[in-house]
Length: 266
Ligand SMILES: Cc1cc2nc3c(=O)[nH]c(=O)nc-3n(C[C@H](O)[C@H](O)[C@H](O)COP(=O)(O)OP(=O)(O)OC[C@H]3O[C@@H](n4cnc5c(N)ncnc54)[C@H](O)[C@@H]3O)c2cc1C
Image (cartoon, rainbow, N blue to C red; front, top):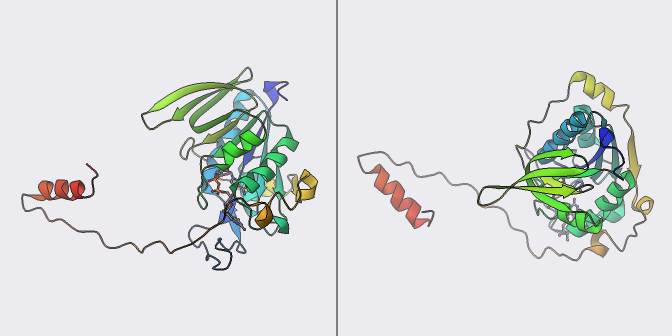
């Protein structure tokens, strides 16, 4: 799989999500987000796309292949990532996928990624809508590949990825053989804006549309039928309340400290 790193192939998992500025509604019946609106590239995944483009550049050549699972044959977010410079994409869309939980999603992504035979797989640490943060590690496990999470810096040389991981205490440097699945944190790189030329070129880049049968998966392994998780309850997030304004009359610092102590923040 890792024949020649001067032509490195990076697969990037990119999720297409409802626009966070207008996310639509939760379906009270299924307790999931309605996704029948136009979907966009999850900003979290724009970092993975940018990282992949830079790694291929640094390797002196290669390609960036996108993999996305989304309803209604949605390709809008994929087109954005292709316009950034990715070379090709695969979209898996199938009615049987409705109700897929994280593991069902990972099964689909793992099968689609395997088809591309990449040297490296990138994903975001967590998506902006579901943010379970488990899909990349599940993809790695299903593909029997090493999983490196919370990457802040990634470099590749001689078939080895060197990754600076963000940890609670600071950072740690790990090395792992390729192929591997690496999930990157937001802000790891500065994603480029698609240029006009990129947008025009994206229209003609290969975009393969797949159903689950094309990946050797059955309806029992995905969707509601394959979900091991169930959503028992959904509630609206509480509306934000106005904060308390503390006017300094000489004791503002004491009142702030008391407030933080009450919250057990200090
Ligand atoms: C019972 C149940 C039913 C559900 N039904 C639906 C449903 O009908 N429709 C629906 O859309 N969601 C549904 N969901 C939510 C869905 O399971 C999650 O959104 C999905 O599994 C991904 O989880 P996440 O976004 O939390 O992934 P995370 O682990 O937070 O994602 C991390 C990264 O993994 C990659 N990734 C994750 N998902 C995808 C994707 N789809 N394509 C490409 N890359 C991806 C991206 O790089 C992403 O940034 C359901 C969940 C449950 C528990």
